[in-house]
Length: 282
Ligand code: PAF
Image (cartoon, rainbow, N blue to C red):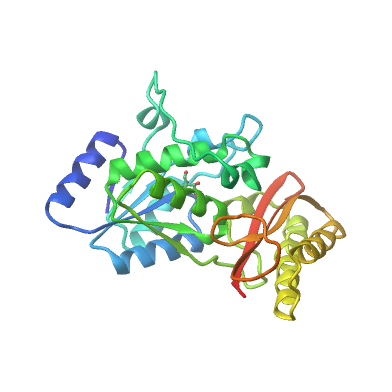
């Protein structure tokens, strides 16, 4: 496994691999790898000749009051984990490599899919994500790129960018990986105290309760949404940011529950903001 820090070098390697006819899979990450990331890498390993993992905590996608400075980082541990699951190249640029002085170009998906949910609570977040992801695509030249379903809205926004800009990369979304007790894996789980870690279980529980209502025949999205919200609001230590029951393909509001449905929520547990979701086909 090679660790590449320079954008020019990474792009040269990727273009050479493409000329040689190799199929490249990219797993974009912000590091501090957990089993969720490793599941993306393992899938990329099975489906491509070359696996590139990017490891870059992207300052553009953090708001001024968010956790960019404290976001957990451990490059050495990440490199060991990446190597153990067969990554060929880790691309780990410094901020100045990605955004040198005078950097001025941004990519933004406009419209409802970036204005609701995390887009509403975190203004500018998705503009930062789409900008860095398109840059990563141009630097690493992937045929396929792998994203986790935990960031369901992110995956939908990236798909939209790829469609709108005719980017020749296949976007692959992989299932959420959970702890045994149901908590979705996230690098931000490390912020939780042991008490908060227990309180955080209210999030997967409330979403599962919403899913159970649908499985039992409930077709009113507002009733399901309200049930999830009330469960969260009555859980100790939880402050609700949002709860939605929306179309699983494009996040639009539903008049009735039918087809692909996404139940998604964001909550604060203490100072830590956690997101989770369940997608289902009715
Ligand atoms: O999902 C993430 O970790 C990040 O948003 C991504 C896609 C690596 C872009 O910085």
